[in-house]
Image (cartoon, rainbow, N blue to C red; front, side, top):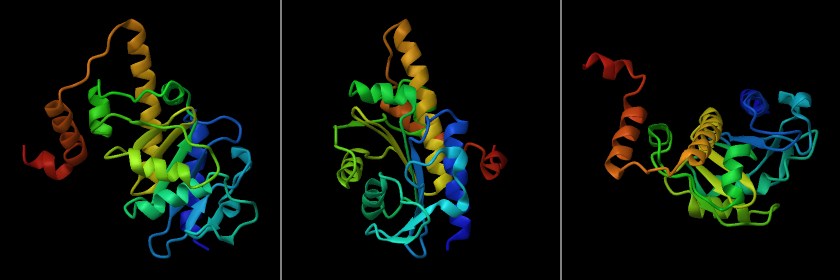
Length: 220
């Protein structure tokens, strides 16, 4: 079932160790098929090098296993809760990437102090409260606190990112770790300064609507 989505989710999971976002078996990616509502997710406790498109698990939005050779991720309930509350989301990533999780460890959001943050996220990366792992409560906290961002830090836990596609969710996970590292390094030098709201909005609009656009370039 869902052969193409299986491949997408497998590739996305393999992108996590490639970008140094996970260690051992931690972290996971899922993708939702808009046509059926079914979700493909990484199996639980499997080394990334042992993942294949075929051993990705398929579940429905109620958590029933539809097709799997291995048990689905222990974070499945969190992913499904987000999908239920956010029909615009078709890809979710969860990591414990070092720098972003360091902010989560101390319960701090990542402020918009760089144009790169304004470009990609258009808002701070919020830090939600602590929630016990293993049930839908994490997903509920994500949807309550993520706001307009596509990334959120879970206090004393890790990072969740969302996207309209699996690839966009993975990109957000890569970018949030990159900007978290830069912000942390900047904090070792001195006081960081947040960008004004109008600059955040202008940079976000430029990057999201005109950056890399051939049509936009032809109007210049």
